[in-house]
Structure formats: C-alpha cells, structure tokens
Amino acid sequence: MNVRWIALLFLAGSGSLLAQAPTHPRHSEHPAQPAARSYTNNLGFTYTFPADWDVVDMSSTLPEARQQAQQSATTEAEKQGAACIQIALSARHGSPASTVVALVLPFSCLGSVMTDKDIPGMAAGAVEGIQQNMDLTSEPQYGSYALGSHTVWIERVKGTLKANPQAQYTVETVCSLVKKGAVCWMAMAADDAALATFEHGLVTLDHEAPKALVPATAFDTKPAQ
Image (cartoon, rainbow, N blue to C red; front, side, top):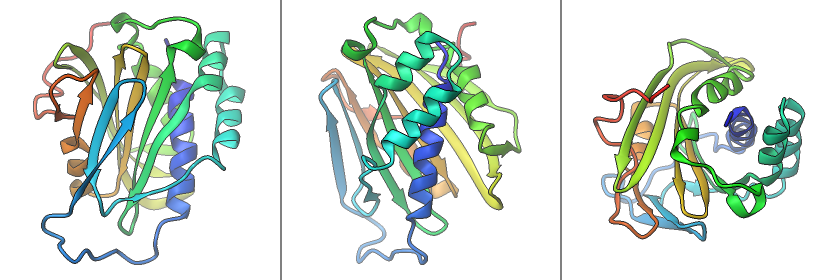
C-alpha cells in the first residue's frame, strides 16, 4: 500500500490551514495549562489536543485536495484510496502556524481491509508526497512501535516550504489501523513545542486504554521491510 495520496492530501490541507493562520500569536489566559478537547471518530479512535488549537473546517477545500491526490495517483488502488480518504480533523496554532491533520480511510469505502503488513510500505509514498511541496533538509527517520494491540508506523523529516523557503518545519506522520479503517495523524510543526503537543496527545484505539500518540521510544525499532 503506497500512501503518496495521503501525503499529498495532507499537504494540500495544511497549505490551506497555513494560509488561514493568525498573523499574531494567540495568548491564552492560562498558557501554562490550556484546557484539552477530545476528538472522537466513528471508525474507532479518539485524539486529545489542547483547546487553544483552532479547529478548522476543511470541507470546502477537500474536493480540490482530493482531486490533486487522484491526479498524482499512479495505480488504481491509489486512485480508490484518494477517493475514499477523509480529513477527519484539522487544527492550527501559533504564528508561524503549526498544523495537525487526521486522515481516515474507511475499509467500507476502500472495498478491502488493510493489514499490519501494509503499514511499513507507507514510508516511501509519504516522503515522495512531502517532496512535492517541500525541500527536505534532513534524512527521513522511520520507526515502528505498539500502542496496546495496535502496530504504529512513524516517519519524521525536516524541510522548508518551496513556496516560502524561510518557513522551516518538522513533518511527522503516524499511521495505524483500527477495526474499521486506517488512520494517519500528520503534523507540520513550526517549533519543538508544537511537535511535543502533537506527540503527547492522548489517543484511544478501539476502546483500549489511552496512551500518548508518540512514545519516547518511537524510533528505537525500525519498520520491517
């Protein structure tokens, strides 16, 4: 399974989020301990993030982003995936803006069920997709870990936006499977604080105990080839 279309859809969506970013940083009344909010998806997962991140409705930009991903697809499987993938959650914070996007792929739409064997194959496609919009400034890092009974794949790379070379970001992609579909969380972090916020967000997969999305040991084990 190649996820070039996932990366392209994420970057298209992030571009829209960055364009809508506030021109000045927001200041919370309680910056040291912002309240948290929880997003729940009917595929079978939840994700918790600080309440001072702005949730953005991406429904108006999804058709264009999906069309771009479909045009870049090279196989029928990729085209079907691009047609089925959904932006479940999109949020931004700060100036320069950091973004988080959660993408889901329902198996009911895809017409087939992915397995853990498909997760490692996501790496090359994600990096290839990212390079459409960014110039990489680091070698990609890959890792694999478990959250409860679920296998998780992670990829991290640093780069600058081709449209704005002064904008430096860490792009982190985290993908796993739940019973009803695939889910990928993707962060475009402008600083270490935003990356830590993304990684420390609590995630619940198929009603298992909540855990931080990315543990400190995430890159200790490399994905199987």
